[in-house]
Length: 320
Image (cartoon, rainbow, N blue to C red; front, side):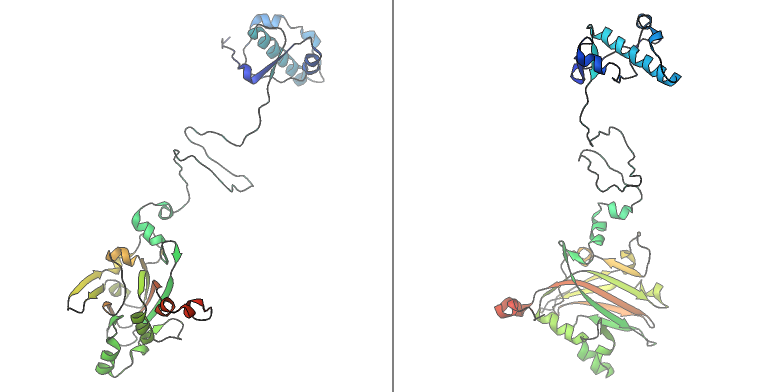
């Protein structure tokens, strides 16, 4: 027989005199832990002829209860009944090494884990859980400092047999393009929605400071492999004649987590390491190959000067 020490905490148990009325009432109903040990003397003190039941299982259960009661009384040094206290139920539980939580039919709505515990969630994209600064920038496409940005969508359809060189946001290009080709630049560059012309956008940007934070490019056409290799040249100029050129390769901006390689999302400010404000002196040089369609979506925030200077404009709910 394996000798194990029987231990119990008095805070977890109540002592009830077996001769008392309460002891007599609960004597046959009390439930004891089945991990207490017993010795031969305990068994010898029990009269097994007193236990009767409808079946063997019921009789055997009564015997176990009597053995547990005798042993507990003997270890406590007092004659009576040791009753285990009922503790209040709680939903809290501790995890020392690890645990698997399953919700069964009912969905788990909330899991709270202490800050000093590590949590690994399986089945979720590493891109979502990553704390890398680059991934954080990509997750914030379309937002800046927690606020949703406006969208400026420009579409370039080059259905000609020649490549089309574009100076985006350059206020001089519409006139230069007209003189060199006798064509209207607005026919080459479409603004999503169709209600606004590209030249209207240029003049608006000159009057109202606009900060472009991030962008999304969609490239479609037969020459996709060559188009994705063409860099964007961000040209920052001063009226003194100073020019600073920053090339950006779109192929290097493709995230390895994304499904479609013809869609390029990138944080423009983080890539340039400076703000991009197209005020006529900050432009983009880009070449659209023959047969290709390039859709550029710029996410921006803008300061309206008319609302800045005139209270009437700020108070108006109809003025855009």
